[in-house]
Length: 351
Image (cartoon, rainbow, N blue to C red):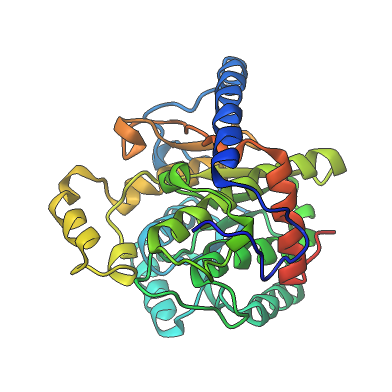
C-alpha cells in the first residue's frame, strides 16, 4: 500500500518512508494513551449497562440517520422513533426505504419517520439531499453518519472517481456534514455522531495512495476509511470548539455486530465471511451494536470529542465505555492534512 506519489494531492505531501511514519505513529500512540488516561479520570464514563431504556425523551428532536434501512442504522432509527424523535432515514434504495418505514410504523404506530434518497458515493446526490433538507427543515439536531461498505473484493470507484470505501464511509459523510452544518448550528444541542470501527486500529492514512490506486487491499482500504472517519471526527470537535460552532462531534464503534456488512462486502463465501459465520455466536446483535451510537446521540453527558464503544475482549462486545483511540488518530497534523484534502476533493468547505 506504500507509494511515493499522490495522484489526487500532487505536491501536498513529501515522500516518507513507511517505517519512519510508523515510528512516529507509535510514539504518538504512547503519548496519546497517557493523555487519554489522564483525561478519562476527569470525564464521566457511561453507565456500563446503559441501554435504550436509559434514553431521555427525544420529543421535538430531528435526527438524520444515513444507511438506516438495515443493521445498526435501522436500530438507531427504531429506537429514536420510540423515544419520540422525528427521524429521517437516508439511504440509496427507495424500495427498501419504504419497507423500513413500514417496519418501524408496525412497531411504533405514531412514529414520525420518513425516507430520503441519497448515494453517499455520489457527491451530486449528497448535495441534492442537503438542498432538500435545507428547504424543509428549520434545524437538524443530530446527524448520525452510519452508512458504510466493507471490503469489496475488487477495487471499485465512486461516481466522482474515489475508491468506493473512502467515498462511502468517509468523503460522503464529510461532505454531507459540511453542507448540513448551518442546520446543525440552529440546534440548541447539535450533534454529529460518526461511526468508526475497531478496524481503524489497524489502519494508516497513506496520503501517497489514499485512493488505493497503486495497491488495493480490501481490508487495508476499509481500515483506512474508518481511521479517516476517526481523525475527522476529532478535528471537527476541535474546530467547533475553536470557532464556537456549538456542535458536539462524537465517534463511536459497534464492536462486532451481526449485520449485512459482510454479505454486501467480501461475501459470505469469502474466507473472511466463512470465519465470521463460524464465530457469529461470539458477536452481538445489531441492536446491541447500536448502543454506543444511541448513547452519543442522546445522553446529556455524552462528551464532544469522545470515542465510545464496547469495552469487552478486544472491544468486540461488552459494557459501554470509552473506546481505545488508535495512535494513528492522535496527530493533528494528519487530521488537518486530511481535512484540507477532503475540502479540495469534495468541493465542500465548512462555514
